Length: 110
Length: 119
Image 1 (cartoon, each protein chain N blue to C red):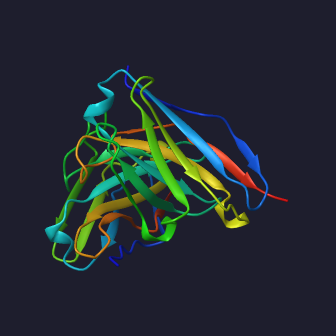
Image 2 (tube, rainbow over the protein chains, first blue to last red):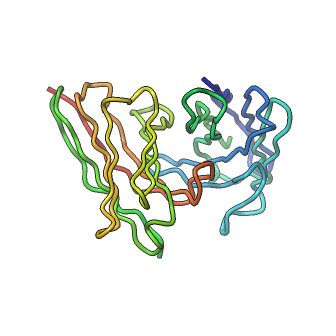
């Protein structure tokens, strides 16, 4: 089955740039979606189809995807960005197509 | 506004079944697929399966095949997820989330339903 690998944690100071990676075999050929989840809340979509932002999501959130790595970039990080972030793809390559999530990355704002 | 409202928390004994509902409003119910995702305490997101509210067709993650059943009621714009033969490892928050097409991102999520399995 398809596996997405994320770093367990990323730390960044306020105002700096956070980059959260999502690794997968030839992930560049798939559409990658990113979710933000704060404690006790449902996930919220922040980037879809590699690099598009839903309405209401700040321009500080951006995404890229190439080769074996997709990246969520958060510019000018704020305290309110502290959360868990998950990447997600639809895997149609196996005998059992379905949704695959990365393990999640905890973003800590120092 | 578009929203998905789920049923309340449940406490079940091992071996029992649980049925969680997800009521959609603010959009055309049959125009969006619905996924179910769960999250054990302190853990990541785990996909369970998808239902097409239009025709009722389903596809389940291999891990849950034989234990999960997803259904829908178009008259009330509600989808259901029933999980049987519950064990302690099924203790989790269960979410419904909609997509316009199967491979798209989950743009709207339900608030989640806590299911606790304990003797």
